[in-house]
Image 1 (tube, rainbow, N blue to C red):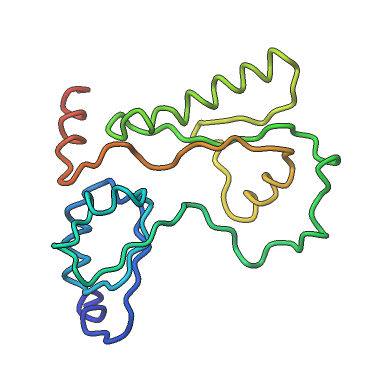
Image 2 (cartoon, rainbow, N blue to C red; image 1 turned 180 degrees about the vertical axis):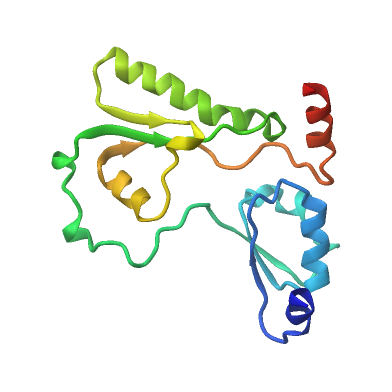
Length: 176
């Protein structure tokens, strides 16, 4: 019923797609089925037509975007902790990702591990973690970022598109 409601809506239909490298074909089908007009994608501009061919989506506008959004309810700039007051020099939260996300998925952990070792070897204050139980959500994330002088940045997503889930299935089978 939800899909039918969206199909029947006559206004602008906008999709912010999450993890579009997983089951990509399913997303493509739904874009057409639901009559989506505008898709914000994390696919780099030069590859959008490869992932979403113009001939298949002639009436859909694909616009590049970045992941990670900050709520409009954040503190005004003049209320933020001064950088000189922040105790942690470098902060980071990664996440272990399965092998089917390719090298990019594995880099998130490797970058955190290498940088934490560099900081520890040089006695630089850091709060760098990559385990699931160390994740930070909601307002806690904003507090964490404000407690750091700098944060590590890594590319998000995957460098592998698994249109039908076949890559994931094959890797899971091999790991058993």
